[in-house]
Length: 590
Image (cartoon, rainbow, N blue to C red):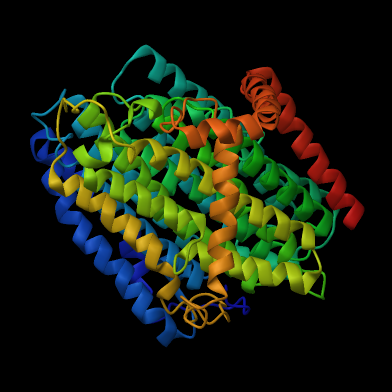
């Protein structure tokens, strides 16, 4: 975590933090200078260097006592601005670099200057570099105002990605995203203004030594948290997320889901764990986790009722975002403060796993759409034979998210389950198990259609270049193998990742989500099953018919609730209620 001492000096290798921000910015300037004809070449020239910088930070960090610091202008805070990197920063820098490079390879064909309207390719490559620079600034920023500026840059880079094709519905989706994100920005900025007025600094390390349970601080914490939740699209503040994905290109959705929502989540982690670790209180943390649990159930149920593959993945993103917030109540230690321990490590590992796996799934869905000309789930029969690499990438990404060993999600789940046992919060263990089942349900649903034989030969309207599928497959494999990496140098992972791999105790961990997920897919998906004409399916439906009808009725109500929550009035009221509840719980805890 961040260094405890408020007196800082630039460390050896600290310049890498500056380069991690300056390089994407330089790429943008060069792209404007060379023009749209060479924008893709500029981006591909910058990316290896960015990847090397992220790798260098990973190598240098353990040799620098776990942190790197660079003081801009050699002025220490509060007069100057410090860039800092700890284990969390290094992991997120590397994850972002890997995902950005994979998305760039995926987008290279579709977004050639001569392959589409000149505006779209030029915009995509510029925005991709801008998102990279903004995220790197968030990961190494050392004060709350710098994080605010980076968050705004991230929003203004992400919004145009939604409307790259310029259609009216995508423009409306982008405008909806922009307005709700700006509402979150206002709340965050009000909180930072309150903190600066109280303490005269927004440096995170200095604040951690100065803040106390004053009214102004608690109000600031509630405002900033609410604003960040709106930008992260945590249930019920997800008004902008599904329509943003509906019309966005696959490469844009991969960045939005895999990376952009992680920016505001990371700032929330900094705010709660580093700037004011003892102030929010366990009750407020329980509220965050409750919203996360709601996201898991709500997002998964709605995902299972989607007709289009892309929207299924979009709603599964809503569910997976909820998973990230289960760590907050589990991170409270005996001192009553949030601790940088296994719960935080589990949450960050889940974020990394989701970034790689979900980006891969969106990219695979984009290849399937390009091949078939549609992404209707019930029209996927035979696609595994026609587009094997695309389906394989989707399957591996989904399996990794299900928490099958040795994926990063399995390690994250194990860490969080250990914390539920340590803290006695058994109810979150139930939520974690349910989350694995729901994830399995929508993966099984898609694969059951994709792997089913088709009665007719599939006529592909186009075929994605091999590089697109390989990029998606590489990301999916990355997510699947994350649990094998040595995390101890960056995150407090005490779980022996290889100790129980492929052992007999791993079998129930695999069977429980698979069987539970298959049952949920049968009970909650309203669409015709590819085995619907078989005798076994008919016998199953005869037995489970009444229960399935009841579940479908309930899931229909959930979908209706989603339509209501995505209205502006409901979203505004929800945001206000979340802010008031957070403030009330924080005041009660103080």
